[in-house]
Image (cartoon, rainbow, N blue to C red; front, side, top):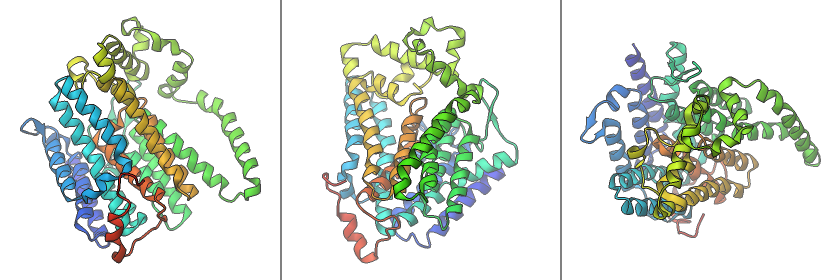
Length: 447
C-alpha cells in the first residue's frame, strides 16, 4: 500500500515539474529541476535507493554523483568566479589539506561531492533567476519539493508515523529514512513558500503556515527551533506592515516588550524534550565535564547530544598540534565514533581543526549578512533569518552534512546574492538581455 502511495507522490512531483516546463524552457534549469526531483523521489523508496548498492555506494549515492557531475558540466563556468563562493572554496581547500595530511582520500571525495551540490544548485538557481526572474525560478524550485510534501501529508492522512524519540514522541516523515534529512526538506518548503511572490497576503500566510506545520510534524527538535528566527521576522513584519513610519519605533518597543514578557510563559509550557534547553542553560557546568563523568541522566540530555559533543571535544583536546591546526581529517569520525557530531561547528573543529572551525564560522556569518544589502525590507529580514535558521539548526544537528541541506543552502544563497546585486523581486529578464546578464557580475570581485 505504502509503495503505491510513494509512487503516486513521485508522479505528482514529476507532474509539478513538467507543468513548470511551460515557462522554464532552457536545458540547464530543466536539468536542475529534474535532478532535484529524482533525488527526493528516490528517497521515498529507501529499501531500494539505500539498500541496493552500486559498487561501493548506494543507488541513491550513485545517482546523486552522476547528477551533480552532469549539473557541473552544463553550468556556465564563468559563474564559478562569483565572490559568494569564496567561503566554500576556503572550506574545501582546508578539507583538501586536512585530508592529504591525515590520509583521508575518501573523506576528500565525499566533501567535494557534497559541496559540489551546493555550488551547482547555487549557480544554476542564480542563472535561472537571471533568465526568468526570481519569482518564476523560486516557484520552479518549490515544485521540486512536491514529492516530499505529498509524502508528509500522506503519512498524516494514513497514520504512518515513525517513533524513535526517547520520550515516545512520533514523527511524520513520509516513509523517508531519518527525521533530520526529512525535516530539512520541510524547512525548505517553509523557506521557499515564504520567498515566492504569492497573489495575496492570505495565500502567503497559508503557505508559510503549511511549511511551519510540516516542520513541526517532522518533529526534529533542532529544525523546529531553527524556525524561530524566520517566524519571528515574519510575524514582526506583518505586525509593522501598516504602522506609519513615525510610530515605528514605538511599535517595535511594544512588540519587544510583548515578546520578552511572553518568554517565561512559553518556556514553562514547553514539552519535556524542549524544556531540556532551559535546564541545560541553567546548568552549563555540564559542558565542562569529561565524557566519563556524565551521570546516566546527563547522558540522555538532548537525545544523547551532550555526551556526543563532549566525546568529540575530548578527542580534539587530546590530539596533536597538527590536529589542532588542521583536524583529524574529513569524514574520519567513523574510525573513532559511532555517531556524527550532531553539531556543525564541533564537527568542523574535529575534522578540520581551528582553521576549519574559523572558516565555518566565517561562512555562516558571511551568508547571513549578504541579504542585509537588499533594499526590500521583507526579503532582507526573511532571507537573513532563514539563513540564520540553518546556523541555529547546526548547533544541535548537521544540516550542511546532508545533500538536502546543501541544496537548500545553495538556493537561499543564490536568491540572496541575486537580490543583493540590485535585482528587483519579480525581476524577470528579457530574452534579449538574459545572455548578457549571465556573463555580467561574475567576476571574483562582484557580489
